[in-house]
Image (cartoon, rainbow over all chains, first blue to last red; front, side):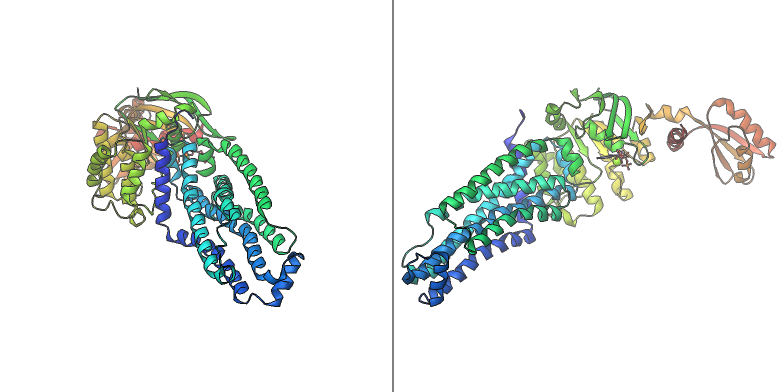
Amino acid sequence: MSDFSFARVKAVLWKDLLELKKNNGMIWSMLALPAVIVLVPLGIVRTYVANPSDPNFRAIALYYDFTVDTDNAARFLVDKVLADWFVLYLMMPVFVPILISSHAVSGEKEKRTLEPLLSSPVTPLELVIGKSLASLIPSVSVCLLAFFFLCVGVDLVAWPLAHDFILPNLMWTFGVFVIAPLFAFFGNGVAVLISARVGDSRLAQQLAGLFVLPLVGLAAGQFGGVLKAGPEYYALIGGIVLVLDLAIVFSARRLFDRERLMSRWG
Amino acid sequence: MSIVVEGLEKRFGERVAVTGLTFEVKAGEVFGLLGPNGAGKTTTVRMLTGLLAPTRGKGTVCGIELGRASDGTALRKRVGLLTEQPGLYERLSARENLTFFMRLHEVDEKAAWKRTQGYLERFGLAGREDEPVGGFSKGMRQKLAIVRTLVHEPEVIFLDEPTSGLDPQSARTVRDAVAELAAEGRTLVLCSHNLAEVERLCTRVAVVKSHLRTVAALTKLRREGLALEVHVEGEAAALLPALASLPFAPAAHHEGNKLKVMLASQAQAPDVVAALVAAGARIHSVARAARPLEEAYLELVREEDEA
Ligand SMILES: Nc1ncnc2c1ncn2[C@@H]1O[C@H](COP(=O)(O)OP(=O)(O)OP(=O)(O)O)[C@@H](O)[C@H]1O
Ligand SMILES: [Mg+2]
């Protein structure tokens, strides 16, 4: 590791970002999920705001919390859907890096570019770091952008009801800037580890994609009223992912071997 | 010495890909690596460029010991490898592909581009630098991959089948470039199935087939087995049965009234002539000839099969 070179990491980062920029199909798939993540809650908030005195909303609010102030049921539900939605927002920082990394890592093998690459001075560690950055930078940017649009959208849609800025709030801000990057690190790590073992980028994507499922399970639990989302709840999830991230760093150390990469990847 | 290897071996699990490699390549030499498909040429080149660690044996390339992981980067800065597949990034332009490797090698980009431009012009790629490589023909890709191998001015250049898939004119351009690189004093190791090309470019060759079969100067390899060139009256083909009936049954080619008979030693010559005369041949002339590399090569590879 003594001959680590930031210049080579930068070269890999530059090349991968350039390839990503020129891959229109990838750009569109990267943006599809964020679009859904932003637009769906806006739709839901809109129904609450459109007719806040709908008696059905009281019933729904009471189902979640029987101590609720039923005069403000719509506002309660807006806050609740936003608190719950964060778990689905987290799908994005997991899924987008999976999309990019599995393509970038298995792609080198599929396109037979790995051997020339490994015959250059670049070390496997530099390669993994460069590729991870090339996946994390666009992923985290997309997540921040999506959060920006979500805040603007929610505040516009909910203004008639709230007469105040609902987002950004403390929980979302902490989640977007701290928990989401931890998830992105996790998604990227899983994708790199899997792609290094299976040569096929589609298969790698699908296998890594399975790691999104626990989030869907959590969301189901929340909307079913079994799990109650809140700051402590998300802090706990963030803590778990932090531990998983450390486990990934640990198991990735075995990846940093040129020959292993050659025989697994090449 | 640019390359010194001793008893180098590579196994993949139980399978021995190549073993018993012992040879030296002098600085400035063009060294040929010959062998049939699956003989272990690519594996050898991968060991010599630090991509694979040898299972056994030792060696140095540019004075750097093989198989010591920490020196991998130092080794790769001084050698260049043209891989069997060009392995270019299709979405990127030729310029971006080359820039990427210049940056990986941390060379001064301005100076590197000056040299590189010369190669691009020679290979007829100048003016197309900014097109995506995805639109390049097979030959253009191969030539671009060769240019990429040279961006950091390697001391030792490994070329794994550089002219495969090229049209005769492009193959010629590549061969001329190889000859020029050799003239600049660089060491070249050339894997090829094209024996005419090896004959033209290499001074010494190693023949491998799972293990090292021979290492010799090209001239010696051709001299080792002699050939007789016999001019006869009428069709030479009619005389083949007579040769086949000889106890050592020499291989022979015929073309019109010309017969080329491969000999294992000079002592076989009188028997060949006697057998031809006994079969009724009217001989106009008999001359000693150097055996083409192809014959020497096929014999070496065949012997291996029988062993
Ligand atoms: N990564 C690998 N894993 C397992 N076996 C391998 C691997 N690489 C090469 N081999 C085996 O090693 C032997 C030598 O292969 P190699 O590619 O070096 O031959 P070659 O001389 O380059 O052949 P060709 O002329 O077809 O390019 C073959 O039997 C091959 O199947
Ligand atoms: Mg080969």
